[in-house]
Length: 120
Figure 1 (cartoon, one colour):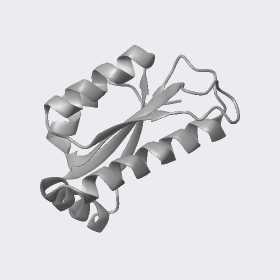
Figure 2: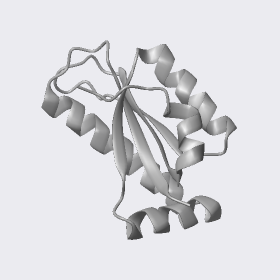
Figure 3: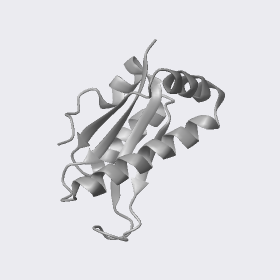
């Protein structure tokens, strides 16, 4: 069983590459912290850490899409987190920017984000 993490960033936001990278980083940290507190998730986290921490950054359509993905991940029992921007740089405070799913088995993560395109 391979494990991975996917991060989806809103494609409708006009943000810099640096901002997108920061939001992806926030998302990854949030999911790792969540996974540390659950026995099943911790097993996936440990495997993910041992295997090189595979991450794939994808594009979500908009805020509503982020929340749809989040609900789907939760319904499958996967680690997930939505990043809400603090509004210190490019976006208004409270803007949802990204979602993380995993680390979890590839086949489960793909049920949530498998149809999304790579972030550009």
